[in-house]
Length: 232
Image (cartoon, rainbow, N blue to C red; front, top):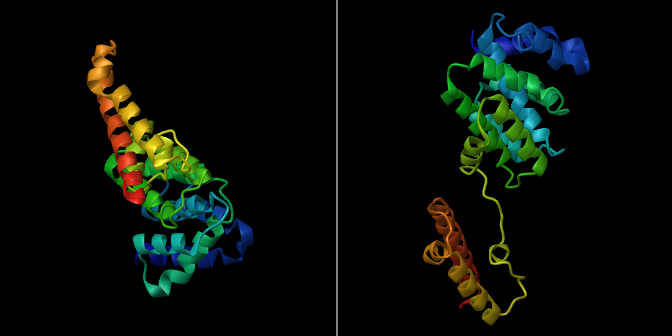
């Protein structure tokens, strides 16, 4: 019997529980009691619930988010209804997501690579509709912490799936209404200010030079984007 078949059977067994079905499933599967039997099912339920609650974090679960979830965690057609029922119950609200995050962290405590895969799966679902809501971002960061990832590790993994829509004008500290001449002048001024040679000459510690190089690269990329748009 597959994990999904076991989930289907358990979902049917407590089918009359109404709104408390997810809680009862958690109890039956050991989700709320680390160390209980059937940990493979507990893990699967936790992943389903956490994915659904992440999608709900911004208040709206898009069809695309559900589609990406089903692509990531494939299940047989005859098991789909029960799996989706668990997903639908979990996505009613975000409350209790910590339980599932902690359960996954406990079950995979000796395998950070698999924890990374779970987190990347959540990031994939979050990025599915092309919009990362601040509440989704906060949810993902909280889950990453519970999985044992630092802020820098989370940002690194996040960058693989989420591209922040920073305006190139913001990078140059200009309004989109700025003239071509103003844009060129500002770009040259920022390059001069942030050039590594200029910073070294002004007494900036060498450790900050790498930061200056990254900043200069961002300034150059922003100007290149605007120049292409305007035909400069």
